[in-house]
Amino acid sequence: MSAYVAPLKDMKFVLQELAGLGAVGQLPGYQEASPDTVDAILEEASKFASQVLDPLNYSGDREGSKWSDGQVTTPKGFKDAYRQYVEAGWGALPISADWGGQGLPRLVATPVEEMWCSANMSFSLCPMLTQGAIHALELRGAPVLQKAFLPKMASGEWTGTMNLTEPQAGSDLALLKTRAVPEGDHYRISGQKIFITFGEHDYTENIVHLVLARTPDAPEGVKGISLFVVPKFLVNADGSLGARNGVACASIEHKLGIHGSPTAVMVFEGAIGYLVGEENKGLAYMFIMMNAARFAVGLEGVAIAERAFQRALAYARERLQGRDLAGGGTVPIIRHPDVRRMLMLMKSQTEAMRALAYVVAAALDVAARHPDAKLREQNQAFVDLMIPVVKGWCTETGIEVASLGVQVHGGMGFIEETGAAQHLRDARITTIYEGTTGIQANDLVGRKIAREGGASAKAWIAHLQALDAELAKSGNADVKAIRAALATGAAAVSESIDYIVAQAGKDVMAAFAGAVPFLKLMGVVAGGWQMARAALAAERLMASGDKAFLEAKLATARFYADQVLVQAPGLRDTVVKGASAVMAVPEDAMLAA
Ligand SMILES: Cc1cc2nc3c(=O)[nH]c(=O)nc-3n(C[C@H](O)[C@H](O)[C@H](O)COP(=O)(O)OP(=O)(O)OC[C@H]3O[C@@H](n4cnc5c(N)ncnc54)[C@H](O)[C@@H]3O)c2cc1C
Image 1: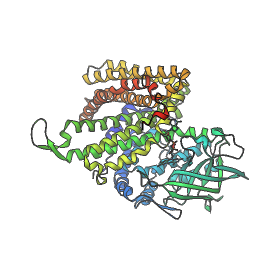
Image 2: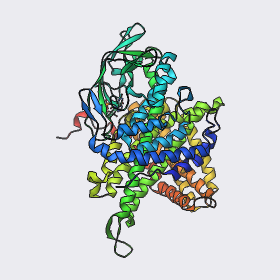
Image 3: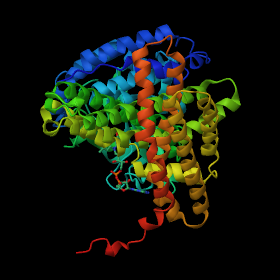
Image 4: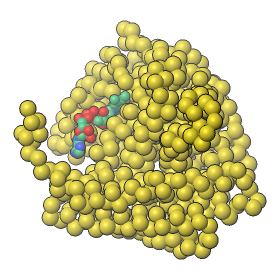
């Protein structure tokens, strides 16, 4: 079975040439992120991913987390890997130095988190959610809560969870029922949450749950939701652990993938909870955190795609089957054009997704730290536009890539021993949690396009047009072809935006019927934008850099333009011409039985 090797060359190329690591390292407070430091971090992270996390991925999937009498035991080796992770300080990487973290930019944490997830997605989820919980407390927690919880969470001594979902409230959090009754300086929380990732586990003594609930006289719907911290064990004034709180894990789910990650049913029976921020603003706080959480799940799509690609590539080089079309004996299947096509689809889309994700990570850093308010605002608008795209497109494409990985393996892909099937099973959740693709697409079309008349998207298209002028200067045949495909893609996006903005005012169903194809179109073109930039950088560096890598990058960008970006006009047609057909067949006539 192939071992995971972090794609360090590509990661560094994207960081330096596309995402502007140099400029991010100049932002106030980020000066530690020098190229040498970042290189050292990536090298160490790649060792941890390959040597500690990857060897547990397959066994963790086979064994799964186990529930017994309220306790959850993670698969063999996970607890020790988590101990090593904490001791090495990995959990603290992007956390503010105020809480004992290393305060590194999101751009630096991003490739590191990609490695954790490629090597072992189940393992990576607990730190990812802990970071989300830390982020919420940092942003809105009262100082007393921050002091009680953040240092231990930043060090990894305690982990965090996000408790949103209830049986009747998934995509629609307006329906949630968990109650929070005030009592002195705290609240009593009662209700049931389902599907809570790492809601219970054996890694740490304490687990800090962030819980959405309603106070007794809260307004109906999303306006009456508040956010609470509910620790598994209460914390004494001196920081030591106190009594067990009234929250318990009733069971964990049997599921399609991420078997190592326990998905818990949590029961709150008058548990003590502390309000985060103000009452009834819980959903607004969740929205602040959502960019980070949705970005993190989008990155899971990139990570799984990379892992699936590596495994398929290794198999394709070893598996002997069929004769060389050009004449000759039995060959490894990588010699067959169709297998090459599948591998290149995997490679090119993975690289395009990685580039887009890292560029968005850099924009998150600039939006948070740049001294110029206008630049902060512009970058935030770009982030807001692109987050649903990173989440929706990278996860949908991650599944496609993992499925291609199974196909490259032939029958062995369907058999668990090769590990290819695990990637497909693991990837499958990424388009569902943290907002399904449908919900991301609604957000993109409703909040990011229709509401502002397409302004941010048109500002982004202006970047594509500026790039066109750069591409026009190249005499390289690949760059010329990429330029033409990108121009067609940009026009397809622009026409779709005009359609959505026009429809939103008169036929809202038609505007939203093409929401997911529009999200995909945005992803395909944004990926093409980054691959075009990568092609230009490769051309520029060719004389002085790693020639084999740069030639492959240029050829991969060309492949992406010819085989992926070329889908843009079809997607536009789905948005513009196909929308009405979506609603045409009456509900009762759907089943022609
Ligand atoms: C393994 C796993 C881990 C999870 N971890 C967590 C966690 O840690 N914390 C947590 O709080 N939750 C967690 N979840 C819950 C997850 O976020 C929800 O499952 C998800 O938000 C979808 O909600 P739902 O399952 O109720 O589906 P539903 O909301 O019932 O959706 C069903 C279908 O309807 C579509 N749909 C629903 N509403 C709309 C709409 N308005 N427009 C268009 N389409 C729509 C959806 O896209 C989907 O295709 C987890 C779930 C799983 C399976």
